[in-house]
Image (tube, rainbow, N blue to C red; front, side, top):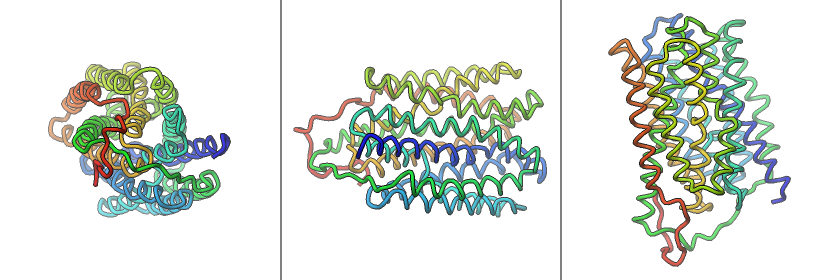
Length: 398
């Protein structure tokens, strides 16, 4: 593929992530309104976020396998269309079962435009400077949070949360579907040699280490993205500060993902990944003592810088270790484990609050887990294995 064609894929992937992830991670805004309107507990209202991350991760494996074998642009267009319909229907929600059902549909549909699938597509397109390319595409997630989350918050205040769901769904349908068809064409599936893969024991060890660290990543990210807005409102009594903090906690990575991608060409990716988790853990310790708008915004900024910085590093390590031929399904599987952590983290935050009337225990647990992830990251082997030691048909997920 030409230089133009490769970077067209990166820009299309980034643009799709702006739309999808910005809308999907605005749930904390909708949750605040629905808790007030329907009187639901925070634990019950947190379930849709768990469905988003768990269902999206599960469907990501399916979409990862599909893009390994079929035309990616049409696969992603189908994902966009079905997600659009689900969001439009959410404007009619009146009960928890309906809310859960529709978010399950949205979660399963949206897996095609996830960070894992977009990262896999980009890694297939680039044989060199993969970290930079993945980091650039992943900025779409961060930009989406910075732009879409505040916009969603403003819209809910102006036209109501129901109409905002409708507008969000319509935007994904009208913009996302044609963008996927045109921006990701033609099919860029490439053939890679499958004659060499790491010895199965070492593969499983690396797979386990990457999966554990990414599980912790998902746990902490989704706990914060679900509960930071409502926690900020309780502390500062300001929806404006809450939406700003939520946007920064997700979108603060807009530059850091590119930076870590570039640094990964010079510094071992496992060491960079360990530093990212260390910084995230320290930020969560700081949140335990944040009691005003300025301190919460500072936390959100630091946490946001680490939020997506794990993506190009984890994807780059996976591509190096497991190869690019099956990176779609391999990284989607690792990301599913990330989403399992995310679903537990989103619910855990609400459960701890309902049990103790405080988020302190949840934030402390997240901080300690990040310190563990920092240590585990150092144990991941950052270089590809020697092809002469490899067997013909081993796989960490077969």
